[in-house]
Amino acid sequence: MALNVGQMVSELRRMTVTELRRKYAEVFGEQTRSHHKDYLIRRIAWRAQANAEGGLPERARRRALEIATDSDLRMRAPGPARVPTPLAANAPAGTVVTKRLVVPAEERLPMPGARLTRVYRGRTIEVDVLPNGFEYEGTVYRSLSAVAQAVTGAHWNGYLFFKVPNPSSAENAAVEAR
Image 1 (tube, one colour):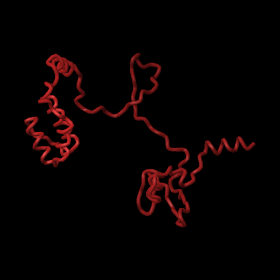
Image 2: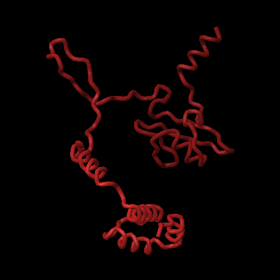
Image 3: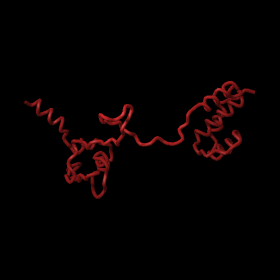
């Protein structure tokens, strides 16, 4: 008798997660840690279809095993990124020097200690610029965008919300005005 996959999937969709986990154990012969209903349905349907139609041919199984055996598996996560730096004139050929990448502060950002203000919906918003963030109503935020989102409830570009001018565009506007 041919397997009707569509009918089987409909029956599986009507089952609870507990029933699906029981069915999974019955079909696979082992327990699952998953509680994800769609995942369990897909896995059970796949196994039932593979059992009905015979699964992978032996040649494909052998080839998959060969590929898995030959692959180089990473046993631990990669370390921190390193950036090559120019070498000294007396360094031996092939030597690479690495150091941490330092990202310069945004040039539009006011100096720590400055206060940004904006009137938003009749309310004056005051934000203090700190060396490592922004303080608004006693809470420290990592970015002006985070402050703007806390104020409005929507995502904003913090520089646009607080109308912080871009020095490069201000210089360009001054040059164009001449």
